[in-house]
Image (cartoon, rainbow, N blue to C red; front, side, top):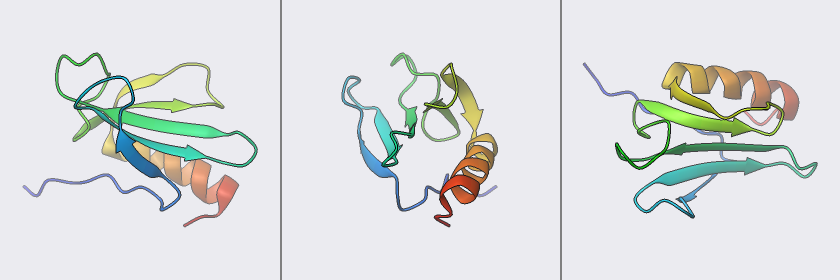
Length: 89
């Protein structure tokens, strides 16, 4: 089985997580302040996703952080949010 990878629009900035060592974050910030942040890290780091097959996501439009999301769930959200709202892809 080939390992799948999550694909982010070019508008996302990838960086090391600012608080959790060894974790990473992808961030999209639109001029109107709409933020989408997707994070992942090693088991036991405190995040709700490992950054390879599961992810934690915050979208400013939602009220809560969503955890343990699969690649398909993240890509579906990005397709609905980025493609429709931003027309980036």
